[in-house]
Image (cartoon, rainbow over all chains, first blue to last red; front, side):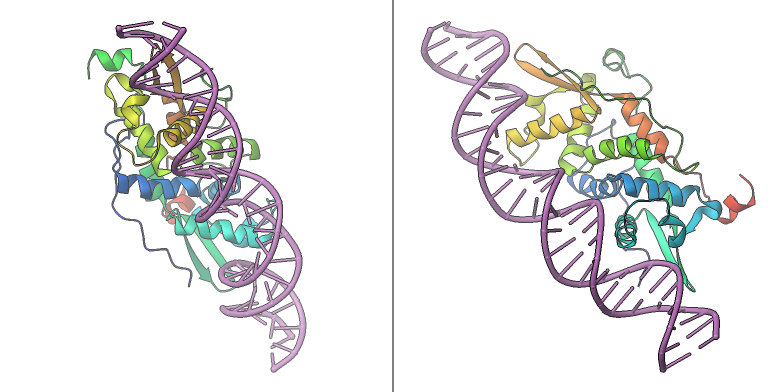
Length: 125
Length: 125
DNA sequence: GTCTTGTATCGACAGTTGTCGATACAAGAG
DNA sequence: CTCTTGTATCGACAACTGTCGATACAAGAC
């Protein structure tokens, strides 16, 4: 079984600079950020996202790294369990693709006001 | 000594779905995401960012959590060393504020195409 | 069926991380 | 000076994480 992992609840989304995160939101979001907290996983994700057709076979992903195949497999599982990528076996190969909604959620969360220099923030808004 | 921690190099920035991350970029970015990979730190960051004036005293930050004061101090240091917040002592209190450029960098990186359904991506772009 | 190739799981191990209590440092009050 | 309060550092410990080699599973070729 490889299918996308449950999770993916409806959580948060407006910039975190607006209002404090609740405990539950923080827990779910931290799980996603944790999946992004390893350089190999970050490169895997960008490799998948930028691959032609928006998806990549594992066979495309093991070459560019100095780590073993089981390690790549482990990292792909972490990305999948965090809800950042989907995966499917098609014949001999297993394909991975990015789930754009997940990235968008994190991106929106981190959106910061242009230049909130504290002075500006105090002034108005 | 509390001032901002070196680092903060010029790195990356266009969406990671465009082209694969280089090893160095991935290393620096993963350090920032690692700082976001703990629920307490995420809540700390949002608490700081959404606090009036764009900054918060540590004394504002210890109350809302169930963890000890040294633990909060540790998490604040991690956020600071990742280049996500700045800090300064003013008299008795120490203030923390978010560094918006850092959040913006991560936000931009995660920006995903609206609906890249693989089909669309293949079609044109 | 056997053989080969692609991918996942297992078990182990070193390194890292979150947490705490104890303690040290910083700065103002008296 | 001493005392009090706010914050950081230290040292320890359990829990988690990244990595590996060995191995199992999946699917096609023969």
